[in-house]
Length: 471
Image (cartoon, rainbow, N blue to C red; front, top):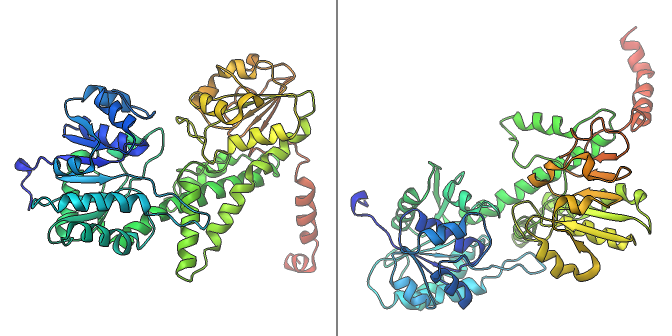
């Protein structure tokens, strides 16, 4: 039993990247001492100078305001020995099969084990990085036990506790999770981490304490399920486009009201991207195959998602020519981040370039420099949304960034074609003449799809079975 009055844990954190630096800043913000370490000396120097080593909402302010509680060192051993609990947040990169590598995590666990060999004090080690089922028990636990010469569950504790965060809202998500999951080596380790979370978190999220395998599977399962919701919403959008007067937002909002489903991530638009969703889908497929099971569902989701940019671009292609200037609003894989990894907006830019248009102009509130690094002189990166669309013949709104909602019809060329993947400006163009507005997921003219529907139901209405039923 841990007495609340005497429980003031000191934290250390290995890895000061997007998630690690944010966690360190959040812990300090909550009033606790935290020391970080990273193989990149620039990240260590930035923390000690009161600067954020990464770009993420709220992190720079939290680091600057809590310098007295937050510091960084170059030595993993020093970080461990000056703390009671160590979070490990290092890359677990994927290979072509979908398998996550444990190489970085294993190196850190070995370093932590050597540090634990030098102290008799109880310590809890918590892996946060996403790993596959079996990784903790069969991959990392033996490493730390061998390096320390000690036994987990007796001399120290080990937990796997993945975070469920999104880039752009990492600080908020860490402090206010829907749930926090603890895969524990033993009762003492899990109880210690749960008590720490009670102090760190701002909300009353439930805590699930379980074994390593369950926690590992929970992490990738949630992300895989979310990708299915995203893909399902997109497919509903494709159907709505063929039904005169149909509106995918009405459909998905209503479907999401059902408590068995929920509305989060049930919005039609571009497909999923970023550093987590695509690779977690691949990881689930790999895990299923490793265990002799089929994962056709995840494979189908991955295949449909990869095809999605080309499917949407096929609707834009007829409006393009060698003298066309194309504007693309949104470059990152989602709003509020500069990350271009697996961004379907980038796929749309590449498709426009491949189509041989005269010029491609693009804008993103955060990812402009990253886009310049990828495309060089192939595209023009504008300084604002209005500058981006001003001279464009065709405009593609590829991310639902709130900044794009402020655009007005007068910002566009009078003869422009606007393809809105997220229906952000549907109200603005509802009665506007001149500009051609095409919104994904909205049914077109009364003739679109009507022929097939009329044929299908007219034929059935005249079958003998139906006739006799009314006779």
